[in-house]
Amino acid sequence: MRVRTRTLTEMKRAGRRIACVTAYDYPTARLADAAGFPLVLVGDSLGNVVLGHDSTIAVTLDAMLHHTQAVVRGAKQALVVADMPFMTYQVSAEEALRNAGRLMQEGGAHAVKVEGGASVAETVERLTSAGAPVMGHLGLTPQSVHQLGGFRVQGRSLADARRLIEDALLLQEGGAFAIVLETVPAELSRIVTERLAIPTIGIGAGPHCDGEIQVFHEILGLIDGRPRKHAKTYADLNAIIADALTRYADEVGEGRFPTEANSFDLDEGVLEALRRDGDAAGSGER
Ligand code: KIV
Image 1: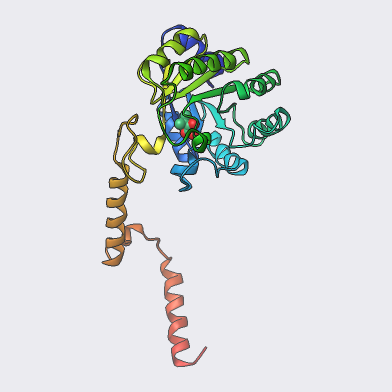
Image 2: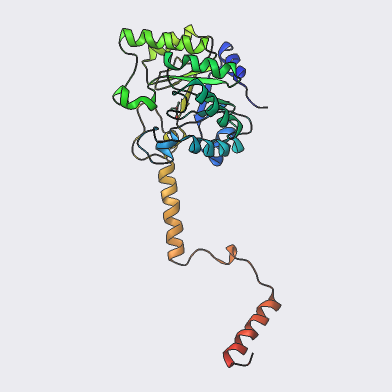
């Protein structure tokens, strides 16, 4: 049975931690779903880990639609949340409604995620009133990386910490069903988590959130370079895939693959007729 947004609130109430992961296509969604994640995020981090950009800013609504459709085909149980890309919800609530509508109608997402606090609270309210479930995202909001001055810890000063708590409450009032807290001090996450009825989902936010989300490629060793401090490598797929591809290329180069076992038979009669054709053509008779 499909996970619903209220399942996540119930998990928080029951003290059950919520493990989430990103997915960007059919195979990653199928794997995440089979592992039992209740929530799969089609993150605009696909700009970094799938498309090779250095930020999420270049990700378009069309790209999100394309990837969300594939994830929805692979995720049979998980709640699929699609990120609203940069400038698809900031210009006006009307545009946000139209674009969230596309992600849900054309993309098949069950919910959308937006970055920001007070500046998007009214839009969150409009979206949720219209029936589009919204996940918030506070702290290090990657779409604002240039404004934040880089990928750095957020909410460290008293004023910033108070603003973050206020933003979280505003998003909850606007009807958000959960909030991602990214790269904020662990004790601040604890306070936010205790103040909210809706779940907090951390990434680089310490152990006190109601759940955790990680980027698929980062925890499975599929990125260029080292994972960030908040990530953990559960498998080194880069090394496994590199080794497999090298062995494949070597076997083809050395004539060890494909073999008879990978080949298809031709009916003996057809083969003989083809040979006779070849002989006749060679002698110029045909
Ligand atoms: O785009 C993304 O992957 C995200 C997660 C880091 C929460 O927003």
